[in-house]
Length: 454
Image 1 (cartoon, rainbow, N blue to C red):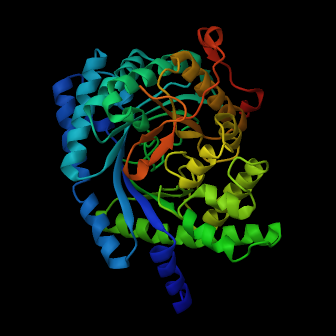
Image 2 (image 1 turned 120 degrees about the vertical axis):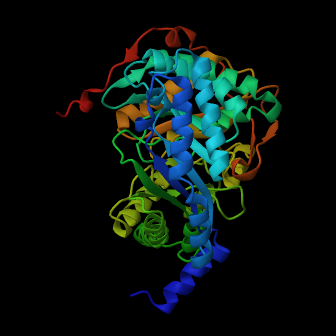
């Protein structure tokens, strides 16, 4: 039974501690849209999305009003477009037409983002994969709501270094084509290792081929709630600290479970997973970095940061899996720089570097996220950064990702404004030593020995 105290406690989390359902994401399979006629393919995609998602936004708003739970975003993820468009697309330009169709469908149904302009190339690229990857700069420059991701590695397959090299160039070109918006296109592009099929968070969401025809995935976020709970046990031992995080994560996940079940029932679409991710926003009091400071650090990036983040991530997952039988996606603590005021403060104080962030990604849920770097950074350097992060994911059997933004025309110490949930960020320095000869090698890095468990 839920008692009055728990009701009041949840209300307080919502009104005072920034608890929200960050997104209801409707995953839609486009495999039944496939044809070798490009015009017909675009028509099929548009019709499928606008039909299946016609009531998504309306339903989310109804639940929000009835239960008083903020649902910040309503989003869509689709089957990786490299697979859907493989038969019909004969060039990168053909794939761009699909991006425009996706954007038009997203506008029609009212969602803020649509993910799945994606390719899965952890072992190699088909011609369609390469066409799509090369089309990403134009696709993101010509659309507002479309998000793109490329999975270039996995623990089972290794890392496709040809794709990594290409993506360094693609990220830089995306930055150039969107330079009038401070290279914002790069904020909609993620490079993954071990990408999950059911991630509801953008920009990396896509609807995996193992999924049902349509499914509801919900992402919950509550760093402010966890931070507030920890202030109540300030100075306590590690056991008390861990129990507090775990219990708080349980309560937050239950809120997401309620919203997911309601959305599933009202839309007549199966429930997929709850992703309990401590996803921060630029709002004061909604910061993962602030949680790390509450645990005992002067700033995120201080000695002990990686250990504190490991503890936080583990307890969040332990609490989440007790609250729902279907916890999935990424689930844990995100550490984006531009979206977290505490992270921004740590960078400005000199406590947090790109190298320290990379160390932190060994134990958190995602990777190098929303990091602004100088616009004159070489493509090969970006590829080297991607390769390092993919190696962390591959060896540790976890999801890692890179979303860096080379801001054309800006350098270290300057600030870039993205707006909204994307926030703002100081431009961070990048190691200037060359990795050209490494990146230029052809082929792939093989899977680690512990991947062979058949």
